[in-house]
Length: 79
Image (tube, rainbow, N blue to C red; front, side, top):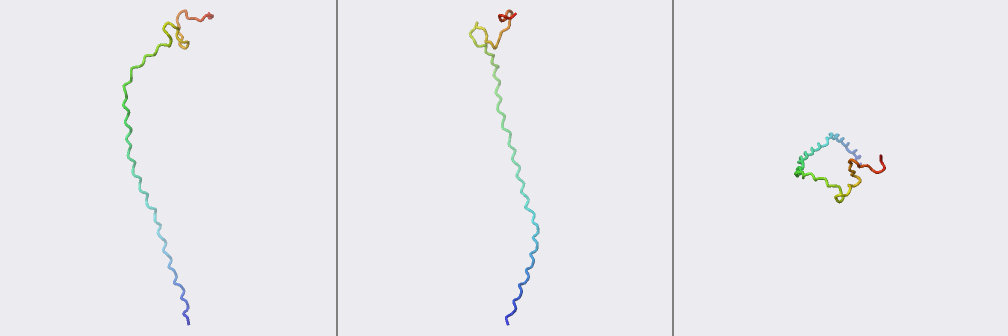
């Protein structure tokens, strides 16, 4: 008589894997301090430029945007 097939041995339940915490992230190395850029050398301030005289040949009246006020400077027609 053929031997009755033996039932397969029960599979032992796999033990639950212990929860593995994620590996800690390595701290980013501190960024090296960037030295501030060297201040540009301050050049000595040149002497102030004297204002140019109003354009026009000497003896001509100054441009209209620079009226010269003085005694007797009245436009004709004004009281």
